[in-house]
Image (cartoon, rainbow, N blue to C red; front, side, top):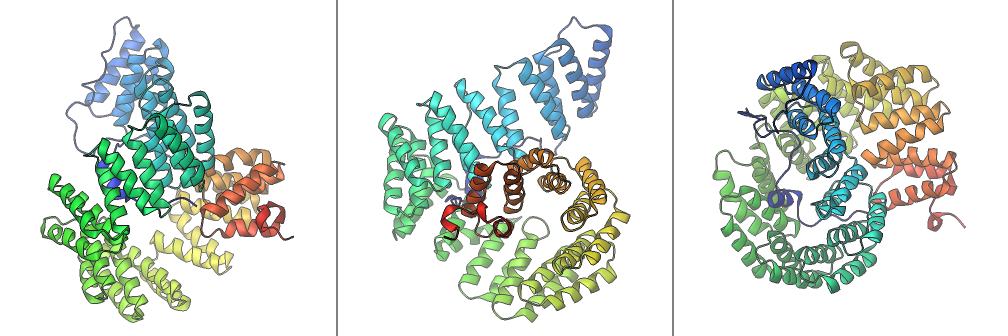
Length: 574
């Protein structure tokens, strides 16, 4: 099972900053100002294409500009024009065009670092972890900035499939056995995949050769904390801080180790010093408050949070965390006041969900429903979302009849609410009422024929549960044309081929879907097709990995029940 990494996502974001593949929505004075110049020597058609591209860029029509630059770059094999096309494509909000431009740039300038870095980021953003790693290894082979350690941390945080990444890094290390960044990344992934002993041995060998690497001690600290070896984590963090005394990541992890060891004063001293260095960083205060709360120290968390709610605008997360503190202290009504202060936007639904669940868990389900009803009156624009929260809450409390009645009343007043209609369809499905499910999905598709989610849900259900495979194919292929990068839809394409008896055709789809979204359902589909095609060892390894990585895995459990030979040896009956 993946490690739960110890610095929160918020902390890591504050420390490292975010690199977005798309520009901010604000106006850009001249986004092409830094692009390379257009060279002379073009024929009339190409010159006209470039002039059109230039004018399109000046009008803010960056997609058209990128298309013109890219066409001419390919014709003249010009890296400079491919770079210009890539810059324009970054502002066009078209990921596929950006990918094509960057790939062309890389093909024309294979030694350039910038297209490799960009393609690595694009691949990672769409969930293609192996593709991102290949680009990063290309950079690493040239002594460029592949940031393999950062990549490993992101893969762990976002639940990527680790075995193929580990295997690829090990092959790289076979050829470059003294590459510190690759060794660190491999150790982090090995530890996250449960092979802590091998990770420790790898880091110990690296420490013998490169003891002056702060990131080495950072990795050793993280792995020690993951394993509950808090004293070892403290010592490793101190070693790292001797080398990099201002490294905020090491300061945070040292404080976490001190908190776990009960050295609260030492931890507070370190964190207070960090706050003093960054007095105007509310995100840091939020991250440290989460750290305190995660380790069971609500009082210092509250001390960090209260000043934030005096600011305008107050960070929504500050109210959520203060509500969490009040909830831990048994002050339910105070917690509810904090949750209600989160305005529409980020955190709005999370706060209402927390408040309602808190009341229900305290035996006050009626109050929870009243709370959500009042919130619907206060925020009519969130009607559907708040109904969905209450339906889920009632379902979790075993009140399915009340949940269905609420949903039916909501649909009677808001019959065209797609979210509620889809939820009604899914509840029919879970009640084994396929006709009711289909009726509600057809209702959506009559009004929104290009709703890819509804197309896929109906198509997959017909493929999996019925013999209406021609209908299923039309629906799923339509969804795939609309959303070709959606892992669930790619999975449906593969499963449809399996149901049609075309396992060879199914396999590439299922591999692609699993690479993008390695969840138990897609894993079960892929494992079954691998098994049917005779790839028995790979199928068993995939099943074993899924059982290890996920707490619950009903699709894999069902698959093992149908194909007992797929079970790991330790779970097979003797």
